[in-house]
Image (cartoon, rainbow, N blue to C red):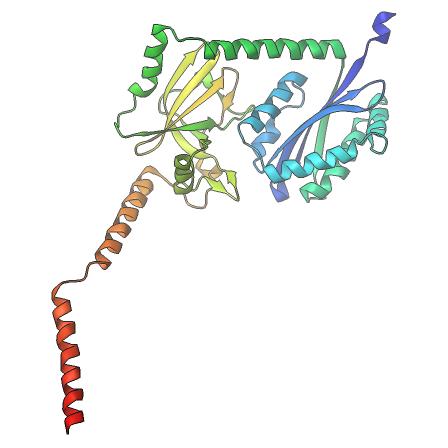
Length: 342
């Protein structure tokens, strides 16, 4: 009897795509099975189709983790995500939203009607009438969801404690090993994130030295912004994937540190869990307006230096020109004086 009275939660996992406007996204909704009210939801949207490759059939906690990680890494379209978030807030508004209608259709197993409701709602913020939504539904005891969340929080706290604990002598050697393979003394090491592809990507533990992959420069500094601009690695305020070559993969527990070479003297470092799949580089998927290879990067740097030198030379006035100018002025004044005396 107590089991029948236990609170249950309906979890809606969804993804949407609108290829004609390059808009893709995924969302997760937690609805109380008794009150029909939405207790929580989360959304992330992007202009890259890789986000749509996440399987809605995966367990809810893994699906939610992907959304959280994408937002934490900044790998999403801010404006689009905000607009869809606002739309879903209206859709699930207590007392005036369509939550009860969605609940009723789920109870009847009419998932296509639920998808139609989401499609109708998301058409405006996405800007495409042909938008397509797919959903998957789980119904679980609320206590089970809370238990999974609690276990995850405890694991994260342990990870934080291990990272902040005093380093043992051997840890120092690990730290130095991260930069020991960088050949240039003056090399730049940037914080980057690997571009992930959960379906077609290569597991991070299978990456090898020399593999060419997609990465994004995520370093939040003036230096990071300089190289983002130099490599055309952003467009309309959104970071673009750029090619990089794997130099070293270092495993520490379940965390992998991947070091990549981006260009001459430019390296990147990322930290990821062992269960991610990395998107391999494909020139056809390089969306930058200007393809920046190593040779082009060297040329661009030399061109910048050349421009500086040219500007400096323009500011230099040969000394003998000064005497010529003085002579011309004196001659003109002499002619005027003679003319006045006559």
